[in-house]
Length: 389
Image 1 (cartoon, rainbow, N blue to C red):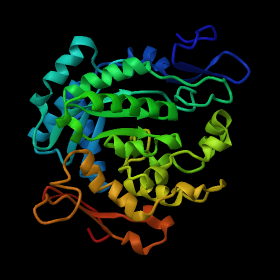
Image 2 (cartoon, rainbow, N blue to C red; image 1 turned 90 degrees about the horizontal axis):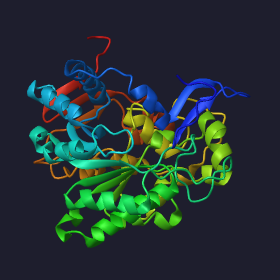
Image 3 (cartoon, helix red, strand yellow; image 1 turned 180 degrees about the vertical axis):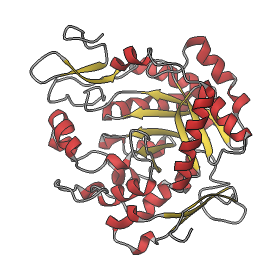
Image 4 (tube, one colour; image 1 turned 30 degrees about the vertical axis):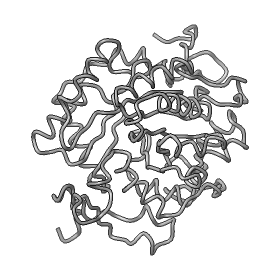
C-alpha cells in the first residue's frame, strides 16, 4: 500500500527512488510496522527448528553463552522446549523487549510476562533483563546525536523523553531487572547513562551489584567514557561495524561528517577509562562469528579482505582485550563469571579449541582461524570435520 503520496511515519523512513517520491522497496525503523502486522504468526514448532539450527551455528563458532536481547514469551517457550529435549547448548540471558519499539508485549501483557518469567528460567536460562530501544540508527537519521546531522539539521530520535526514560528505567531497576539499552548515537548513550545513574542513585543499595549494558555505541561523547565503569554498565560494542567501508562512506559520512565518522565505535577510549568491554554481534544484522569482530577491533580494517578505505586505528585495542570481551567479560555481564568465562578448576567446562594460536599470527589472520572443538558444560557440542572424516 505504499506509494508516492504515503508520508513517512513518525520516526520512520520510506526510501524513495532517486529524483522521485516513488518508494524504492526499503523501509526503516517504524515504517516496517505496516509490513510486520501482515506477517503470519510464528508457531512453536517452526521457531524451535529454526533456533536449533541457530544453536548449531553458534556452537560451530565456539559460542557457549548468549545474551538474547529481543525476547518475549514465545522465545521463552522456544528455549524451554529445547532445554527439555536436551538440545540447549548455550547459557542464555534473555532480555525482555520493552514496549514502544519492536515490542512483543505491551501494557498489562508485558507486566504479566515479566512477573511470570521464572516459569521459563532454569540453571541455564535467566530472563532477569529488560531491553530498551533508546534511539534508532545513523543511516535513517534516527540515531540520537548531540550535534545535528549535516543532511537534515536534526538531532535524531529519542524514543522516550528523558523523563519517561528515567521513569521506565527506575521501574525496571526497582524490580531487580538488568537493563540493556540500544544506543547508537552519543545523545542516546548519555540519556541511557543518565537514567541508569538516577535509578542507581535512589534505588535499593542491594541492587548496585547488578550489571547493565549499552549496545552498539556508534558514538559516545568523551565526557561519558568513564561513566560506564561508574554505573556498572558494560560497553557492548558491535565491533564488526568498526571499519571504514562503503556503508560508512556513502551513508554515514554524508550525515555525520568526517570528524564524527573518525570517532565511531570508541572501544579503546572506554577501555582506558576502565569500562568493561563485551562483544556484541547484533546477529543477524551483524556477523555471528566472534573472530571477525575480534580481528576488526584489533585492526579496525575490513576482516573480509582488502579495503580501498584507510583504517582509523586510534581506537584499536589489543587481542587480549577482545578475547576477554568474548569470554570472562561476557560471563561477567551474565552474572556467571563464577562458573564460566575462563578455564579454571571448579568452573563449567565451557571451552573452545581453535586450530591456531591467535597470539602467534598476524592480526589480519585472526578471523582465518577455525574452531576445532566446542565443549559446553563438559559435553562436546561441535567438532570440525576434516578430510579424513
